[in-house]
Image (cartoon, rainbow, N blue to C red; front, side):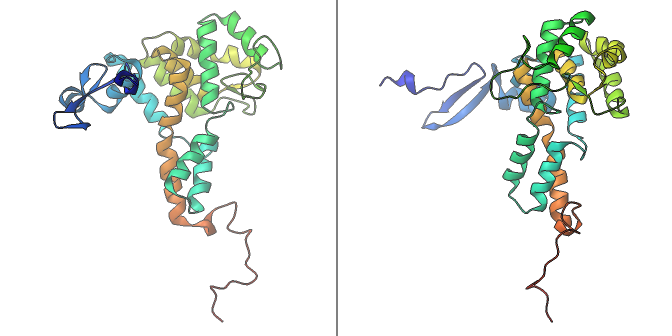
Length: 272
């Protein structure tokens, strides 16, 4: 077997081995930038994140927009299913890795999850800022087995992508996020969504969801649907982590779904 077959192929990462140890690197390069000479001393975390995903340095506006997206997602509410999954795992005494995996698994779906962001990104690629196209395709996604029927491992879409059919009006935090991000973006998607939100909500009889806002933001930043899906998963983990740790400390007796329902008939820990 030739040595070339034993080399990992990556356009993102390059390493230079130590002269006396081929199993250790003396320099790392990310998209051509020396990690410890250029990136670590000079870049912010958001700038380095953009570089990793996009392969180029962000503009000042792009960095500011992605930073606000990260701040919003890192403050995900305990109402979110992925955060509650982590809380359930944390209060059970599961390992930290299992807790984060629970958050990722539950937060990966197509109703408020990362796959919905992926689908919304596909709609942006298809419809752009054409209101008629959006109205047509949002309504088509509500119907099973249409031309836009989603195959693979996923069930039929049961709601308009990026919207919440169970919410009678758009929640204030989502409106605040959309307004702020639209003001910061130098792209067109967020601004257009901010202008057309009410019309789209009336079309689908549902309120704009956070997944819809985030998809517009990621589209303005130039990410692909797969990059957006990954980022949506990763950037919500801080909330899942801290709320799980909090519930772990509070214990199951204060957890609303278990504390008052569990009665031990023969508690071996109670001394008579």
